[in-house]
Each structure stands twice: as structure tokens, then as C-alpha cells.
Length: 119
Image (cartoon, rainbow, N blue to C red; front, side, top):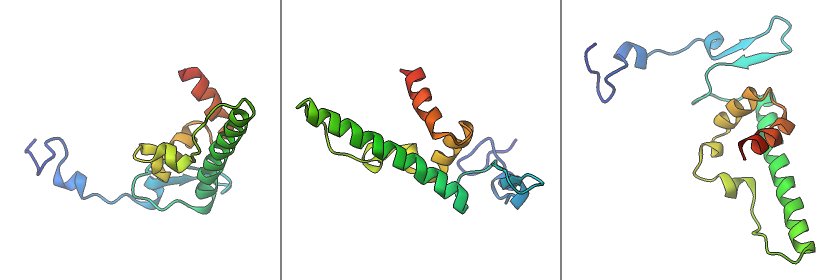
């Protein structure tokens, strides 16, 4: 395969391809469920934005609880937010966060279990 620009594996045709709406996101016949296949550089719908914000709220609330526990035990705990923690990481990109959530079937409580499993 001939080398193309800075990418020796993908042709110009592949790089120039624009996916169709159905290739980006599949909608179930009932319209109740959807599965996103392409995340990067895509506008999220209201449901997706709501779920991403739900995760951020969940994490911010957990931080508030940790901060209060630290105050009660007279320990120091840095004041921070979701945005502070995930700045300059893939989780600062809402589309990536959605991909992560979709993998967990958009159940925020599974985030905690995932975190425990990895530790």
C-alpha cells in the first residue's frame, strides 16, 4: 500500500471517508435505545449529555463527601472538582467519557465497581 501523508497505513480514501448517520449511531426500532459507534468529533445528543453530566455530578458529590470526612477527622484534603482531576486527560473530553459510560451500560454506580476492581 502506498504511503499517504503522515499515515502509512490508511489511504486518502479511508481518511476522507465521512460516515453516514447510521454508521455513527444505531437507533433501535422502538427509538428507546441507541448505540453510538463513532465518538470523536461528534455532537452528543441531550440524553448523552445528561449521562455525562450525571457522572461528573456523581464524582463531584463523592469529592464533597471525602472533603467533609477529612474535615471531620481534621485531615487535609485538597478542594477540587471533576474538571480539576481530569484536566489534560482523555476524561476531559465528553465524547470519551460517553464511550466509557456506554461500555458500562451508562450505570454510574458501575464506575465505582470498576474503580475498586482496578485497585
